[in-house]
Image 1: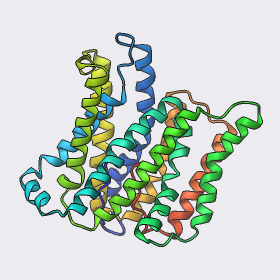
Image 2: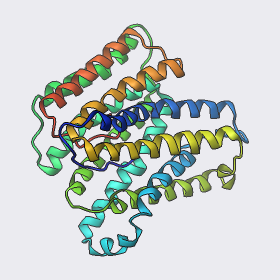
Image 3: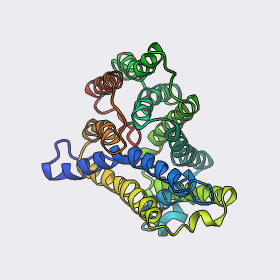
Length: 327
C-alpha cells in the first residue's frame, strides 16, 4: 500500500505503456479479487470462522511488498534512520500508520459490507479530500476547477444512494460506509504525508519497506491475538493460492512493481491519467466475476465520477500525488 513518487519521460514510448497497463489491470482487480476471497471464505469456514481476514490477507500482502524493498536497501538503512530528526521520524510513522495499516484495514472492512462498485465510488473521494488536506496542512493551493470536480465526484457517489432511497430501498450498509470514510481519510492523510516525504530523497527501504514490514508484523500480531496460530496454518490449496499467490504476490506485489516501473519511464501526469481506467476495470470485473449488477443509477454515478476526476486531471496534470486507491 505504498506510494513511490517519481518522474520519467514526458512522452513514453509504447513499449513502456505495458507496465502501466499491467498496473491499471491489477489495481482494478484488487477489490474484486478481495471481495471474491471474502465470499469464498464465508462459504468454506474453518472452525466457524472465515479464514480470509484482514489479518492474514494484509500480513502476507504487506510483508511481500515490505521485504521486496527493505532487503535490497538494508545495508544503508541504519545510517539513514540515524540521520533523521524526530520530526522526520514522526512523519514516517504517520505515513506508515495511515497508508499501510489503517487505510488497508478500513478498505477491507468496508468491502465486507459494500459492493465493489459502491466502494469504488466511495474511495474516489480520496482525490478531493487529499487536496483539501494539502491546502490545510501544506498550504498548497487548491487545483483549478477543484469545486467543479468535487461536485461531480460527490454527485457520482450520492446519485445511486439517493435513487435507492427514492425507490423505497435503504442506503448501503452504514457500517460499511463509515469504514469507507475512515479509509478515505486515512489514505488522504497518507497522500499528504507522502507528498512531504517525496522530496526528501530517502531510499525505498525507508519510505516503503520499513513501514510495510512493520504493518505486516502488526497484522500478524492481531491475527495471533484474535484467532490464534491456526489462522496462518490453513493448508487448503485454495487458501494458499488465493491469499498468498493471487492477492499477495500477483495483485499487491505485482501492482507495486508495475507502478514503480511505470514511473521510471512515464510522467506523473501520464500515470495518473491512465490510472483512472482502473475504475472501469473494477466495475466491469465486479459485474463479470462477482455478478454485481450495474444499474442505471450506478452507471450514471460512475460517469459523473470519471468526469470529476477527468476535469481535475485535465486542468491540473502535474498536481497528482494520489495514486494507490483513487486509480
